[in-house]
Length: 99
Image (cartoon, rainbow, N blue to C red; front, side, top):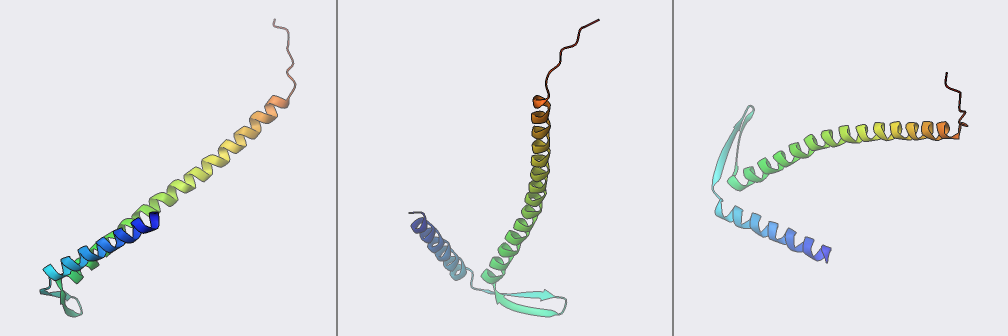
């Protein structure tokens, strides 16, 4: 069921992109340092969205990696403290007289 839904979503996105391209088929000149290029407006839009998505993924990956490192460090600390508590519980309790 999930695979069918995924295929339908991909098909709809493809059709939406095709309609977008057909509605925006005029040529645009892109000037950069070494020259210029002339492509359809929709191509530049797709490239811009793709570049933005990639930058967003790279930014999120740095945050996720930082958080995973923190979780790993905290998990080690919890394990060390659990071991310490287990060791302290195994020590026999000796009651002393109060003065």
